[in-house]
Image (cartoon, rainbow, N blue to C red; front, side, top):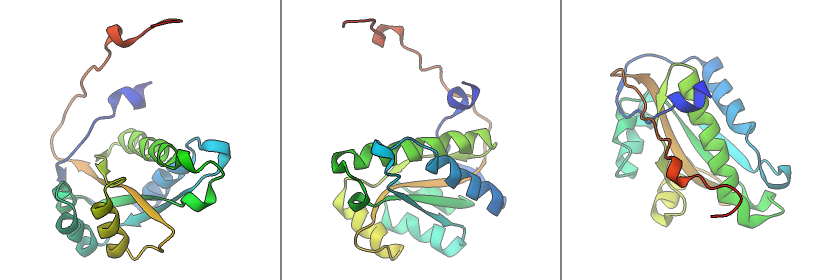
Length: 166
């Protein structure tokens, strides 16, 4: 519960290199997410090049934090790999959330920048990262060391919990 409850969105980062081991552990966390019929339809593009990170801010209006990020992970999906195509977005969302929790647990910060289902964002990221046509960019996760200490909100709202019936 600690890793889940301490996770929050971080948009301001301070300089600091993130090791290849940590980045691969984050991808491993994403690959450990549940998926419909265990299809594991995801792919991850780990980005560490400064020029590439800076360029993301030019192709997405809400990704300016990429200019400060030390790394980023582009969560992608391969819908054709799934037997149940209608679960593509749920599978990729589970992978993205696992990455965000693992980021927080690693002492880093990150934020989910939505791409899917916005066609313009999808096309921009597909072109920028030279993705094959059958791969769909789903979410961009800029990662870094938090610039400011922060405490996550307590989001428990008991009025939204129902037992057995509404």
